[in-house]
Length: 281
Image (cartoon, rainbow, N blue to C red; front, side, top):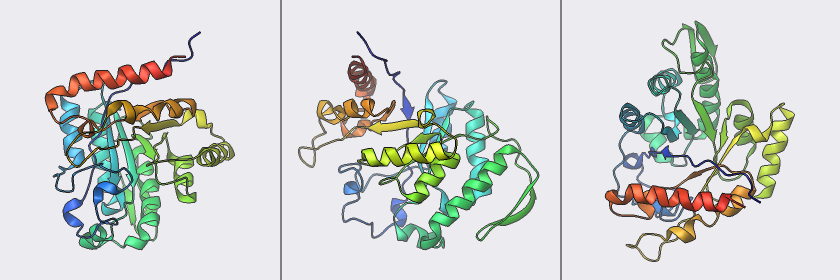
């Protein structure tokens, strides 16, 4: 007997990192943050929305994941316009994960109050929803205020791009944003059964079903030394448990496992084959 088969998804995921603005990261080695070995601290990072626009122009089926966008470092009207345009030209393939980040340095460099970043994000989410719904609309908050603004053209859908939210555990602010705006739950690092219970309860209280929320898992890379890539077989093993918990989408960072870009097609096929094998019972 076979259980449900999880549909493999290909995601284009450039990660937006303000490394050049941060002189003192929260941890000594930025690769140790959330996922050890995640990135080389010296790696350059292009603007993610421009990179995703280039990807949108040469693809038709790939979902384009802006994960993550440090929203408080941008004005919400400009961000709504940029994200809406990208979602429109990609015909609804854009996924956005708004976040606040952890580095004080990047906020100081742009003159944005670090301690207010959560409240800023909450206002931004309200404003972007209004902007994508049409206009004219006005807004008056602690951090943003304007009158009679119209955004045209809007996003592909009236409610804008699909939004993922995630973090370390299901905190009250994260739960509030997921319940009100979220289309997907993308936790960083490990999560617990209690986290999923909190999420299910919060969704139910809001009249939503957790089953309608895309749950996004991923691999756990372990590096044998400073130079060698991680073992894929070991890294994908946590996907088995994630499938049992209702996760259906999985993020994999190829640069953790291969050093040659020419190996990418075979690598992607290998990942999908392994995930499909785990989903079949």
